[in-house]
Length: 288
Image (cartoon, rainbow, N blue to C red):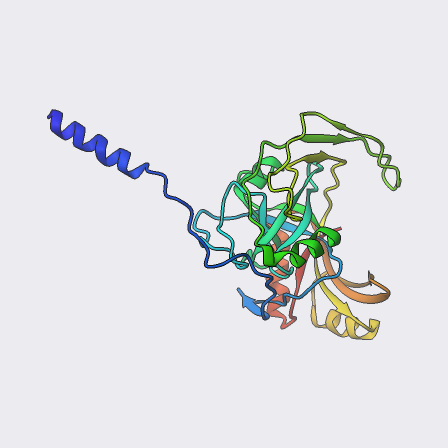
């Protein structure tokens, strides 16, 4: 009996042995990639000179591939994320619009596969930003152009992805809605910086607490150069609450078709699937 107990403990302990992370073949590499289809939705990665998008974010699953799309080891405790379209690697600020928490993360992988999702984050990022235990959350994703350009230019030096430090939290008092005044920021915990200061992609791990700004969800088909073309698409969405609206892209005014508003993720997802069934390509879910 004693031998059986010892054998059982040995097996249990053997299962708890920590495996070293997989080693990528070579250093991280700048990656864009071709367009691809995921669950009926086409994604077109390219180099964005600027990027500021709202939408729904999810948490990466436990069965992530061990190596990311830009050849870094996947680490669930890293300040990292996956984007369906951004150049890799990239530095973005992710804001949880439900609670106003935001922080910088490194986008180094492709995903998520779910249609209508703008980002997937590691479990560590999800915990720090207060994501719900299940289901997606409304976010804003904004590219840091300067840091991204510097990081991509340094890839010959092989920057290393480091695990997240214990994050400091910065509370930022904001002006009233519509005000350009951001107020002053107060550091609530001592600053902790990621090591490897030579890496332009280093992240501070700090959380800024701003004003929560959740909003209704819309399904959007963006990017028409003429209002007439947007109206053609809108007319295909028979029976759906669709309308056209101007959107500003750099120095151009484009026209988008929006469907909604929807108050729940389930309703927005159902509308996105309905848009696809109408034969309309490239719908996305936005917060507005």
